[in-house]
Image 1 (cartoon, rainbow, N blue to C red):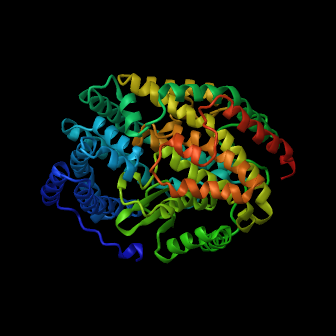
Image 2 (image 1 turned 30 degrees about the vertical axis):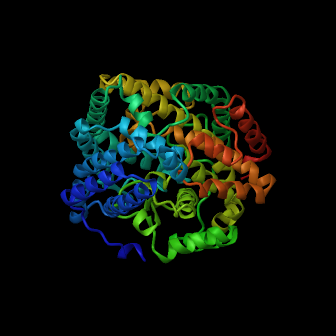
Image 3 (image 1 turned 180 degrees about the vertical axis):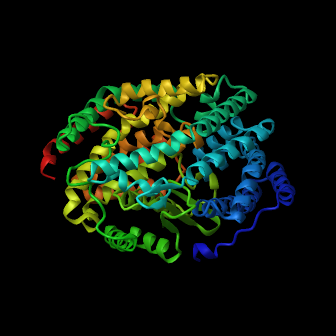
Length: 564
């Protein structure tokens, strides 16, 4: 069934509440596990329906944030999703208190049971109003980004539409595009500050009502980090500072020399070569056609998967007026369908979306037998292994997209993977500071960001832009607003994906088998368990970061980037 044919119907909360409570009571009073499991499965049909309606409404709203109907539906879900979460909390309590705990764990896994425990810790009926407010503020941030209407080069453009100009070979165009892009944030600085300040305050209130010292603890629980903690993350950040920041700075130095610049500034940072960055050699239709060839040739599994995505129109890829910014993959359990959303902008990012988000979608497709909505996806740091690894697994097909720019793309892709990690840990440490000190002023928050930039990204040069110099780069980072503490996940996964890069180069068959195995497990296992299934080293393990960097540095040093 095509996505356009997916039925959307707003759930009647009051009717569902009665039905939900009755089935939860069945679970609680079951005399046999068979009866209890039957009731769980019956409830999952209802829960998957709710999840599906919420997801469909969200996708259609993102595709057109100016749709009157889906604007109202977005408002409905902002208001009501905490109420549905309250119902889910009743279910989680019945699982945690089950007389048949061992059987539940045997059937659905320890990770599912742990998720139920964590969900109980992060929710209370007392915080429903705060959760509703948090949802509304996140939607306000989405609208604020999507509402950008910037006159540039004779046309009205959104933020995504400026992307290709910010990578132009003409430095003056890059400069003008960058100034136009950040001018939108500067003109709306008070709005971004206000939305974020309210988010910090409401999240702190949530933490206090739940009995925690601050939101950091709640953030980790929300992220379902069942087998690692803030101390382990802190130690990982130290390893990044020691081993990856120096390599990253070396790459920026090489970039500056390649571009024949005296210094690298913010308008040059994403521009890699004087001849221009690698770009796709075709329009969106061409990219999709080459993507089809790539996934058809990669494996039988990816051929079946990509055919499913195409036949059912489960991708909305091209930027357009009123469309929300960014890209993501989500899942509609009722139809067992992944969905990929993005904003093609004629840059290499378009190919990264086709590999990254397809990595998520492929995992969901391979584990679509899972009926328990909590474990369709694994936790986020595990999810990102699938997506980031797919970016590297598909390297042998990059010539389809980039032709003569293929080696240029690969060098940029690998360089970007390394450069990203210090940024990712910066975002994480910034959030720790913010939520440990919720009463910081708006100016103090910006100062903290700029101080951390100088630690992890010492190359940063905002010459000519006082707005960014005072510490506002993070305004465009949606995760900081909408998904607190979801960012270190990318860096942990990047360390794992770089291991997959090495695996498939040394033994394609074994590397692909390991990848398929972690996709099939879905969310049944925790992060460190999934790492073991994939035969990977844990990023928290002493020596892991150093060994990964060593392998990558050898490859980067072997490339004569001055000739690209």
